[in-house]
Image (cartoon, rainbow, N blue to C red):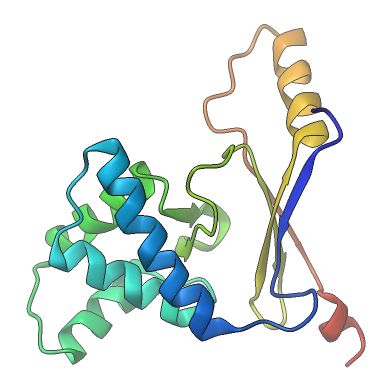
Length: 163
């Protein structure tokens, strides 16, 4: 498994955004049912807002979009919905951007690497077991127990390098 990789990237090839949005919602419903979690209407709306962006979106922007849709949730309610979605592994929090993106593979290993284009804002998710294994081995060598072994790499995607 050390060489296994799963690449989920807007950087590679054609991308049918409407398909990934509907697939994400279907997968979220299945995952919540499998885990015995309740995907409330508000949580589902927050998930839909995040997937509609296809770029990282901050909590305040999620709240504004909910309000634009005619909802009046208090900020703590929106934050709890985001926290639920992160805990359920349906979205990721990109720490360096203080923002959220949809998780295209909620049932997968979440020791992933994010490649963040600093120009266009797109994020590619890579689940590379070799990278995760090396990170965990380094932590073990230090007597350290990694709790969230996620790497965020900032740079330029292929398209932005050519402009």
